[in-house]
Length: 373
Image (cartoon, rainbow, N blue to C red; front, side):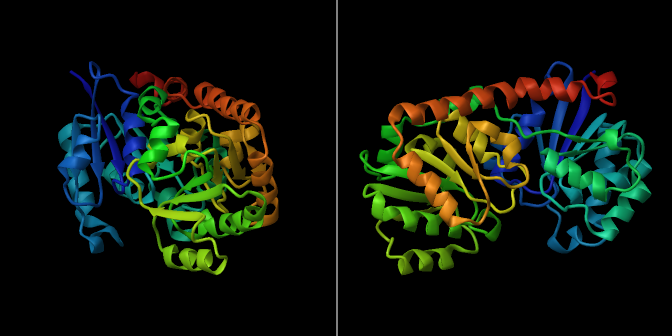
């Protein structure tokens, strides 16, 4: 009889579908049966089809029920736990963790993971108290970077430091690499000139991603880089203000905002340089995609970013357009050989440190998990 595994997530944003697939691949089909459950979001067959887990459930909690005690979701998940007897439960983000901590009070869960993807998620006094009250010896807290782990170690009460660990987001290199479009094809599909030098970034248009600094840096270098273009993929609350900034800097022909692009990583090779100007970044999974594409990277020395790229990319201070401009100009002026060498360095790092095989080795070496293999 196969052991039952639950991966419980807040919502099915694209990055979490990828992460859930990453965790699903820990468990072989002959020995385990994996169920992925989502707290919010309507049932969606297209979303379901993007998972490799055989079972995908949509709890579809009403918005009001995800606040406070979350009784609707608690009842659903308690019933599911009693039916399935999950041996390992992996929760992504706080609300699924909160619910399954309560479920574990009424039904045995041998191993419970709480994986946090952002900084300061356990900073509030109420969350600290809930964990202190409910957590048992079979729980592991994991941050997606050492920065998040260190944050958790400061904020989580009553959990020994050896059970607050780092589990990096990894990437399925064998699945991702074939999906990357060739440079010429990617540019053609995006209506970009084959002769332009393209700086690109991918991310939500929010303050933490700081595309404003990137646009200002590009404005500094544009007079010295006649065939440079800046591509920004993503949507969000700052779209209008960023477009206004581009107009004020007279860059409407040179900075192209593409909005949300499905599977944006496929077009990574359209860029000559990838830039991540974030001022807050727990990990930066998009950096792994850039490294697989063998694209030179400039990124800020913020939170978990240095752990991802280290010397494989160029690290700069956050919110400093003059320093960013200097590094962008240097790469614009670099030779093709120099750019290729930087890209290859990133590829070597991602294949060595962020492969699924490495993730599996780390996961199954954990003392609480080892007996369940």
